[in-house]
Image (cartoon, rainbow, N blue to C red):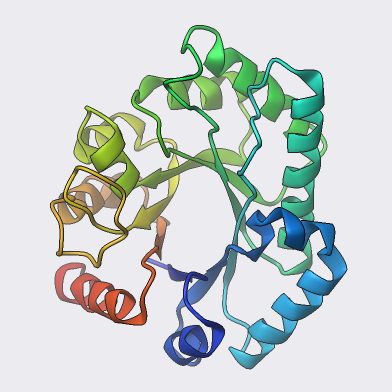
Length: 251
């Protein structure tokens, strides 16, 4: 399983972990609007960083703040498309194989009725002339499982799948992370790994919370033999503990 490390720690520590290890990096710099406003400068900075890491595999975390692919407002959808297009272009330039995009669902704001249909319409339009890079929809505040299957089925594009974030499923949904994996395993292309106690999003090292990550990876192993993952912890120590946990438990 190809494993990536999220760009959540300072560059020098990230380089120490990744260089020569075979690990990839999930870049979050292209999720920040100020960096997208300075796209060429950001691209140069990222290319230099990757060179110093001996050109690891790359995944792009797309922008998400203030964006909503299922928005009713056409201007919000237009800005969302522009920002996602920039992330897609970054993926193309850096030879990344996927872009991770949040679903945009905020359950206390949006009703589920019609939401998956609007989201699917956005992705149909976005992907109609784009191919070769997988877009993975990530669950964040999402409480329900089925809308993800509905979106991907409605779009029917081979380059649209799901990124299952185990920590988010564990603390934001009444359905267990194992339920998410069991229902959506045909659609899941990538997994975000981090732990919490089921109360809030903590991004702890694997094994420090109650996320059933070993069970979930077991569920997905047969269904998705090419599954990849990102360790999404915010300290070097937590990343190294998580890598050791994976090595000890995944064969």
